[in-house]
Image 1 (tube, rainbow, N blue to C red):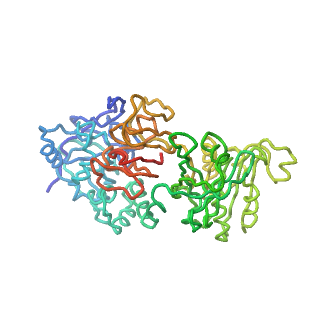
Image 2: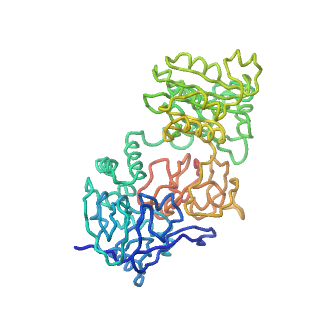
Image 3: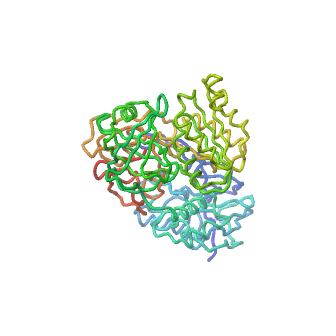
Length: 568
């Protein structure tokens, strides 16, 4: 069957009111008459409001089919829809998603194109159509549409014939690739094949590589919810830091941890409701018990370090965290400031336990020796490594104190780190205050390290992902305004907010509390809002297309089944 370009649809971004917010979006497209000039990154006269998710070289032109128009008209009981209603640049006859493959190439008019990926599931197509559930339906009905990369620029005109010039490798259709990312029962062989298709956009290839890597990672936390652990010791480490040692109540070995992980603790007695806080493990990953080292600041941390006695039990969630030491063979750079030393110290313990021959750079900043926790441990561990070197900076120490500790004068700044000359082929792990991590990341990048090999740990809430929203005022997380809810208690652990659930979805509740949230489709498909559940369970309505793994929840379509603690 001959394929034809039925319509060229263009539109510049505009601000649209949505749920009391303002969305900057280019999803409103309208048919244009005459030839349109297709460029490498766009079409003349067209634009995208959210260039992180739309537009650019890999998503220069979006394509949707007449057959899918007819399908949705029947499904929604709509009259004949105007071309461009799905945000597409090209409305075409033919080129079904089940037949077009990633890497296929087509000539239209003067231009040539290559298929790079399916549509990104996004709430804005539902906003445009007035059908909020549409993002999920596009995936469930196997009608996502796809993007073109522009191989040769030129003019195209409605009515042009679409001529196939090349067949992509692997024979993976747009429907196949869309299902691999968004639907359950993923085929491992197809995942491997998709990750190796050169034409597939880098973001999708990375997603498939991550899915393959996850298959080799143990699923779920070591135990569900919180379990009581016994405090066996509380020991000072500096003028402001103490370590709390924890063991199983029966004295048995606790599950093994990975270097860099953290524990989340519910601290009954510190406040009402019981606050929930997370602390990095500072002990060797193979130890029978756990150790967390806590700086005395704030009500909860002060209570743990000054009021909790040996023999007390604490409610502890299983070790978690993605800030973990990898198995690379090259140099490793461990950078920390203040109490940020704790997760990288666990990594240092792990490297020593392995008898690592890697080049290890230990870089730490503190004010003075009295405020440098775990300093002796770190010094001895680095000295035991075959290729270990230590660079410690004291900003307020005396010359004698610095000389005794072998430390440098001044703060560990971006310039100071740059001057050390860390190897460009290293993998780096950075922990400390947010501004410190920003500076260190910039310095390491300037030193030639691949940004993908620079890992940071932050215990405050993660940055929000709210595509397209503009004019948002950032406020600290807080309990919701208005009458309190009557539902289960929901605790946002990283944000330090706990309140009864008032209804709606968990995502809407997080937004009402100004807890930084991550979302894109808001219909249970894209998994952007996937969040670790530390304790409790959720109910779904509607059910997501792919249920999350144990210990995770999709906030956009869930409500708390009982009291719930979320890692956000």
